Amino acid sequence: MEWSRTSRIGWALVILLGLVACGASSAPEVGSAPQPAAVAEGAAEAGADSGSGAVGGGDLERMIIWNAEMVLDVDDTQAAMERAQNLARELGGYTVGSESWLEGDQLHARLILRIPADRYEAAMARLRDLALKVQRESASSEDVTDQYVDLESQLRHLQAKEAQLNKFLEQAEDTEAVLAVYEQLAATQAEIEQVKGRMSYLDKLSAMATIVVELHPKQAPPDVAGQGWQPGYTVRSAAAALIRTLEVVGKLLIWVVVYLLSILLLLLVPLLAAWWLLRRWQKRRRPTKGDQA
Image (cartoon, rainbow, N blue to C red; front, side, top):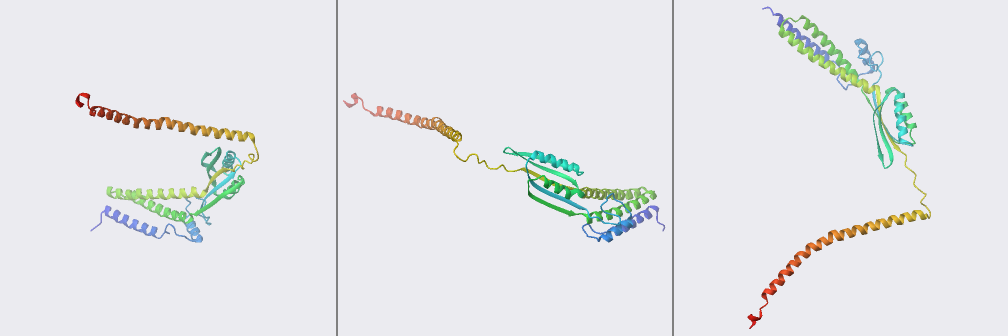
């Protein structure tokens, strides 16, 4: 019995998907650590350029995501903010966010800077130069090279699968077969976009380092002018103490008038009422002269 054209296309589609799945399973898993030589050889054989200058070709350059935090004591917070922002622009970066606040009458600030990764060390050194003292400094890094290489491999397999599905779509004439191939093609294209999006995200993170800078003004020196005898200061202190005493006395009088007198009135009313009732009761109990005779 001869197979129909639809059956032939259906079986061919199944075989194709099986072969693509087998090829994908041979790709390195996400999070594995392939050797640099093997990665370079695989990238050279594929000849695919994903748009990243960090991974691919004959040499493997590590993709590092740098993050740092600095807490600096500065002479002038506002001037230090402007210098830090100008520094970021000068090095090819930019300010992601900033905030400032007052503690007492002193200005404090916090900046989030994005600096090109290759200027990261220079930026850290120049930010230290802004400070009278570096209170705290911390840095962390994440190597995402292996993740990126895995994503490149996944992308090549998905693109090969997409190309084969496009060929089947051109050859399919039966409506049912067209719909089956189109469904697989749409799912594959969605996976391709996801992988490309993740690769672009890693590209951007590794291309720019993030530095969070907190700026605090230097502590004011203690006031030593109050040492020794200062009549004016003594007079002001005595006057302030007198005002505080008068304030306490005034509050006490208000409490006496408003609170204690109100309590006394509330207690006096029932006492007077009871006394009046007692007097009336005694008058009624007292015998008259006619009753005594």
